Length: 229
Image 1 (cartoon, one colour):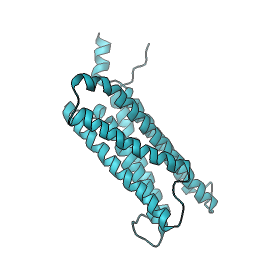
Image 2 (cartoon, helix red, strand yellow; image 1 turned 180 degrees about the vertical axis):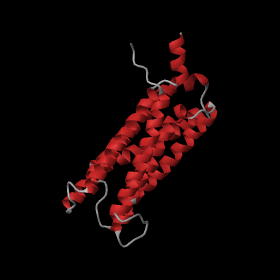
Image 3 (tube, helix red, strand yellow; image 1 turned 60 degrees about the vertical axis):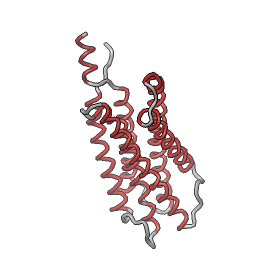
Image 4 (cartoon, helix red, strand yellow; image 1 turned 30 degrees about the vertical axis):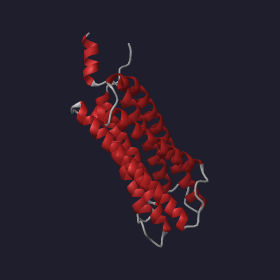
């Protein structure tokens, strides 16, 4: 018997994990790291904007954009607009999040772009932007012909998921990198903050996993049609 994944239950789990991830990163940056600020003598508060926007703004909103086609009971043209707008919001917040990291480094006299996390991050945001422009031009405005859209859709999905998986993996690397720096500075390795950061990274990976599964799962109607045939 072939296993058939239904999209709807997967989207519920993804939504729940999104809330968990958002709460955990906010608790970490506010309760353990002192809060967020764009201007502050405490430069760590500037950095705290980075994980919050990259997780909530980029990973979560980007993930919700991806699964919107399977999670929303709306017309296809409406879902297309929601998909496009959510990706635009994710892209903008991702850019601001990266800008916050550069600002923190500059004001703290720390070199930029020296780590694998930063290299992958720049690559991901560039690819994400190119993917959004490509999707806008082919599927929205001015839009390609129906045969062109049908031919390019699988590539749009494949490239989009590649970029998203890379973004989730890089987020996990970022949590690891930050926690390593904190522990080198004296943070207790088995303390509550260390556990919170690790579990936030795990929750992020699980969220990305359910987004990925939702994309390749079947809509309920498709499953029902297959069972009745």
